[in-house]
Image 1 (cartoon, rainbow, N blue to C red):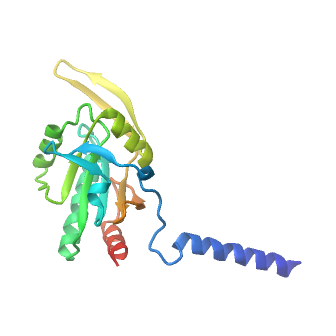
Image 2: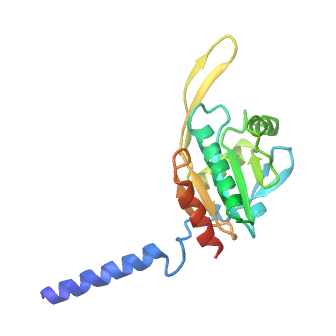
Image 3: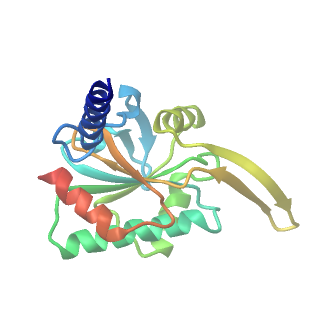
Length: 200
């Protein structure tokens, strides 16, 4: 009886290990944004299709709103560090995508300024926005929560916050999310190594 229990235990552990390692793949395929294509606008106001626009390339995707005082600037800077490290190591075929979940404020013009202030050139980095219904659907499929929190109204403007998911996603060449990381605080070396594994 004890031997049977041990056999069952080791079989279960073996199955779990195979599941976690993805049967030889670097990571499990988490989702592909519901298999949907989202019509969005980039920072130049150009119509794009996401995630179709990154097909054939590995994508590093971040989710932000430009009025964010803390998490989102850190996420954007970490994406810049990932980009710098990948370039330093000669890794090509990567697209960087930042999607705003605050489209009523974050127009293409606002996103362009956001990138310009941070000296981000955008040949391989796209800042995306779109109709609220489309963005809301995209965030739902991505598993990103974004809820408006308390607001402060002054004579000059309204300061508001979102309680939101802190995330950077690694997306494969077929548009599947393969791994998620904390956006504001992560290990750049780990992410770049994961990009290498995914590209092998």
